[in-house]
Amino acid sequence: MNKQILPPTSGNHSIAPGSTGCPVAPPLVAPGSAGCLQTNIGRLTLLNPVTVASGTFGIESSEYLDLNLLGAIVTKTITKAPKDGNPPPRLFEVPGGLLNSIGLQNPGLNSFINDMLPLYSKYSPPLIVSFSGSSISEFEEVLQRLEEQESIAGYEVNVSCPNVKKQGIAFGTDADVLFELTQKLRALTEKQLIIKLTPNVTDIVTLAQAAVNGGADCLALINSLYGMAIDWKTGKTRIAKGIAGYTGAAIKPVALANVYKVAQKINIPIIAMGGIYSWQDALEFIYAGASAVAIGTGQFIQPDLAIQVIEGLEAFIIEMNKNIDNFHGSVWGIQ
Ligand code: RRO
Image (cartoon, rainbow, N blue to C red; front, side):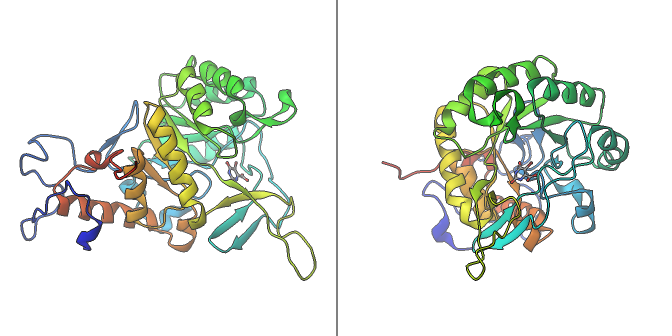
């Protein structure tokens, strides 16, 4: 390991040959303390801080990785009615990442509950269901149905979608609407309530504060940036709908800045995502103030990336003889 990456307060503790798991040597990890990768994201404690970003992961991912090793499982966003999604082409690879315009394709609430939930429920990590709606009452209706399902540990509310009652302005870009939505959903559940924020706003902290005021347990950020690609030879759009969501390595600095900004002002846990392709990327988000991270677009290059990130973080933590929480929000050198 390159020692130059270590922060100045870190010790260089050696691990007993052949030892595995978390260090228990005092004083850095008290005997009987939680596991070294364990993290709290509000009402849930995760065995490790690594999950998957909604929409980049499905039950079919179990062909490539052991889902039981994840800190949590997050589903693709579902809506009340099934959606076919947008016309193709709706994916286009660009330097530094990927454009997507899937258009919320999903089988709808009934099919999710009857066909998909039983498959997800076989796995041990907390199951977080991402859902969306086109009006506040539709969000409420979906949540009420999901509440009947015991296997669901919590919800990630996707607010990057148009509000039909407000000229199609996304829920996540209007602080008053986001507050009202969060408050109404909070009143319906005792389970973990995560609001996933869009970066496509003037001041993400205002939106984060609205979600906190409404009773969110945790924030997830960032959803995709806006992006577009055009074929210079023909002038034709690369994505049928024109403007798409941009994710991948190129957005990591944007995501880090947003996580840092929100963490400075907001006192609830953050699940960070945006261009995480390695355990070192994940650690940077933890320094910036995230309690957990989600692996997204990187999985399309390396389907078991989430597990590699967990293993990398664990090896690092063992070498450092610390808990992951020791790094939380500890970015330094900012003047
Ligand atoms: O389905 C999509 O096109 C989509 C969604 Br719901 C989202 O939240 N973020 C994104 O980049 N694409």
